[in-house]
Image (cartoon, rainbow, N blue to C red):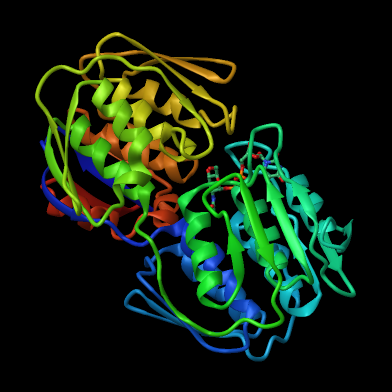
Length: 421
Ligand code: UD1
């Protein structure tokens, strides 16, 4: 296993180009099952999760090649409708194979993904939504067995206790594009990655309206065609570099991100006193003065993203004054608190809230990553800390950040990868 070693204290400067969005490409790759024709997907980040998804597709019989950001896939001959536990348990996003397998074969057997360190993560909304499309579902031996004679459109209210669900909306949408009649999904997720999936499906010939709003209307079609498609940039990767600039008192220009996707984050940065210069194609983040504490609450898009909560906490831990973070999507997503405290942060967890009393400086320490975004938060803390921080278990980072240490090195960071003893 690898660890990342960071000698903190460097002000990061320069330009970073944002890669394709992990959370957009994963459902898009599962959607290729809906057509027999070949598809080409561009701007695909070179990530562990992407390679795992390609592995699962190959297991199902799909031809899939990755070459420098371009994926060529062809699902002409599907030889299995089962996504097994040993693969699905490694990556929750593969549960989004359920909808397209149903859309293509009228049957699917997909392992339940199980919980993870950020919380329970149920799948009730996925099941409820697909049942409304005339699918019979039983859960036996840890697998979701889904079958239908014919998918039929219907009205689905898909809101849950914690608001909308990104992958449940994706699953239902990918089945509904092949259902007979009209499907209306109310309380649908509005995340940009879901809009990207809808755009991909529309290019394939699907009839979808209202994506990006809480009400999506889908008219089922008989067949979908192969297409070439470019994935949107990763707003969470962009957000992570934005925070890297702020936390190191640096001057980073972020290229290729979509500004609108970062609105909630930028709003909070500006409230905290960080200068964000915007052009059509770039964002420059500079710190002119001392930061002010801010409160954030994570919410479904366009609210503040839960996937930026941990990274923002690192920034607030060195912001003078008291800030409060409220986690409304995953109330247990605070595994990074204890590790940040090991680096000298003063953070107290109270239920779904973290109360952060800013300190002047963080100190380097050996820390352990528990999930993808928590790992990113520890790297950011390490970049700001004095001394040498070692972040272990960085396979989490490789799941979701393309060439992370190279990108940081180009900005001047002293960061490298070592084998763990
Ligand atoms: C996606 C993202 C993940 C992000 C999350 C929230 C991908 C691959 N992953 O995950 O990075 O953190 O959105 O923005 O796109 N819920 C239920 N029942 C369900 C499904 C979800 O109660 O059937 C709850 C969840 O526990 C959570 C909330 O709904 O509290 C939102 O989760 P959801 O949007 O489904 O997350 P994912 O789509 O799995």
